[in-house]
Length: 363
Image 1 (cartoon, one colour):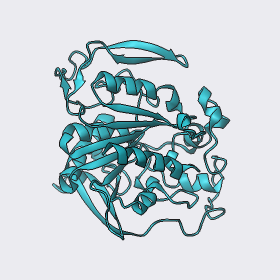
Image 2 (spheres, rainbow, N blue to C red):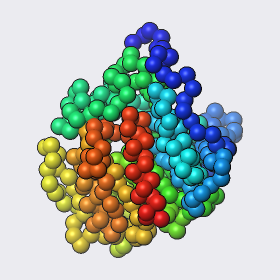
Image 3 (cartoon, helix red, strand yellow):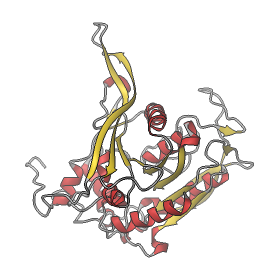
Image 4 (cartoon, rainbow, N blue to C red):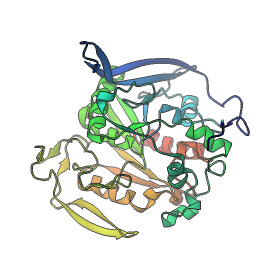
């Protein structure tokens, strides 16, 4: 593992991107003391945004905003690690304006130590959870994984190219979500009404942005969002996601308690057990997500992902809370073998075409 890594073999020298007019800007952010005792300040909490516009003109009324997941950046959606066309390019070809971002305190959105600790997921974690899950079988559905382009292991040029793109993420989920809620509201205020396409941990921010600016979120497409409700598959903590699918407050009707150390925000009860894990939903009568009830949502799940076991509980939670959500299981549409990183896998364009059909129909 100490030898230099080569990503040149089996990688297309020129990625298959579509031409576009490109711009970038930053939203959000605040000045904080730099900690050196000299009354000097740095900025933190700002978010990098990259706008891509079709060279032949925009043909759809609402732009698409991608929010990536933990340990990732907006590069997830540009092209694949083996050089194939990515989701952003495909959507540019269809005439959509596309916005990519790096979450706050990550990638091109500068991090400062005052924002708290970060975590870097090791390569072995990525192998087990995302790129070669069929070789480890940590969940039964993992054996069905067959869409990653390559072995999915360290030393494979495609894996190495992918893993080189990963970055540290904040460990303070509530702090991260607060930064992202503010930055997301600023972005929507700037670009206007948009459709959000979120992935994994980025799914949390989709709920928060729609809660902060319900009139500016036309719809949400969420790819295996952080879940299940009130739990985490990554962090072992009973205090995670007290508001169901977020760690910071959402507006519920009736209102919930948001006092630190007070009674639990939402009353919950255990439901079905899947793969020896008990899942939680709200007690009935369930409170409603007041600012999300008018936003159509598509939640998409791959056949071989760990999410195959529990995305259904996220759907149940959202429906309990009054959200109009449709659950798209790829396997039920004849698309098989996908893990968690659908936008990088071999059938990525087949998947985005299916998602775009829903977008075109719903809006």
